[in-house]
Image 1 (tube, each protein chain N blue to C red):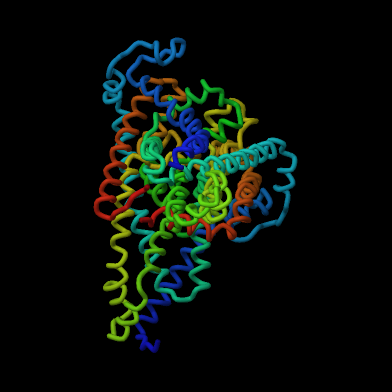
Image 2: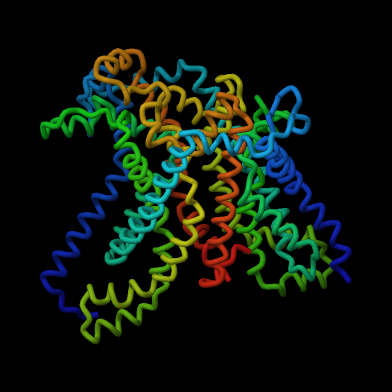
Length: 296
Length: 294
């Protein structure tokens, strides 16, 4: 059969990608052993002594771990909800406007923040919310005392969630726009002839039509329950807000690469990877079963 | 369509448009603010008098950047990283997607390899093992560490593979009849048809490499080897006055340089702002390609 003769060409095509996958994605997985060892740099991963689950036991005794897991889930949950509802409302609002040039211009503007890096956005935010920055000046014109926004643990999660929504809502709305444009316009025309008001058409036609997409997006986002957004928080936080702003990823970075507690940091990272993997597998499974969604 | 519009619906629609305009401005404002600060003089900025329009207009900050060799070095490292990263991703993804787009009848190991890719996309060893491996294979203090450190872009492979699978089978059949081999089919037939999806992954790769800052912090021992984003983090984020009280802030503002940093931030955004209008249609298509499929 002709295809057998093609096999060697197929393997040749796969080779560069598989090499990349092996060295950067797969090879690091042997380091997972460090989570179960008292890692000693001189001895390397394989010859360091086994300590069983000591690293995990130690992790659960640390106050830090409770705080970082709590902060991570809290921030991630708020982001999941906010990044579902805000883009949805925004898409519905824009869908009511019939002026093409207007909708195109609005879309162009709101997609933009998604493409800015968190370094840039954090740099600008720290400036805007600084002690002498525009936000504090605005507040002081209402007679409010200037605030050190990024030194207030009670404000930090709100700032993180709000800025994440600001950056991503436009881009996240793309999928809702595409769902909205696929609604059959004849339904609206028929409804208009029957005398349905604009509001009626929104609640009776538009909303029911995009429920499946909303459910799908919401389900898939649950896989991110332990991803509170490393790039963002790493650039915005500082020691004064660790109590509410420190998350698993930032803690692992400090414990592992700054304090060199390799075993402990690997253990915490592994727990996160495993939970994340299980969560994503479940949500993909659900999406496949109920929405026939497949990634390949 | 003739339609009677009530007063209530007119007011509602007007309010809707006003809100949408405010939202749009909210998205553009930080970019504008940065530009305004970068074009103002240091003194009024430090005194907190600048907001919507430059005060004591000057190109001074941009002139000052000209004398900062580190800025240019970092800019150049970012450019190299983007070019190498885009070229490698383009070639590797294209070559991988084709054999994987075959059904498992045509190419037996296809499903095993797909599951391996998906597993590697969803699971990783975590930061510390990644860092140690990168060190052991010599990707520290090396631009290739930045280019390859993110690992195989599995999601892009899946995107292109799915695109290939939806192309009509007949084209390949007739090329086979004419005696074309797999390389001819991929490069002569599939690649020209895949322009939209390849453009999409190219855009996301370029933006991703341009914006990435963390790998360099971990992989580069010397600040001179930092790409632009890592460099900007060093000057505009790490030394920041935001969590300081008035007294320290005043002392620090005279040391750090708000207008200069704003100019650096603006220049780093500029390449993106320039190409952005041209690639908008591709990423919109890319998102829907990736999400709605049979």
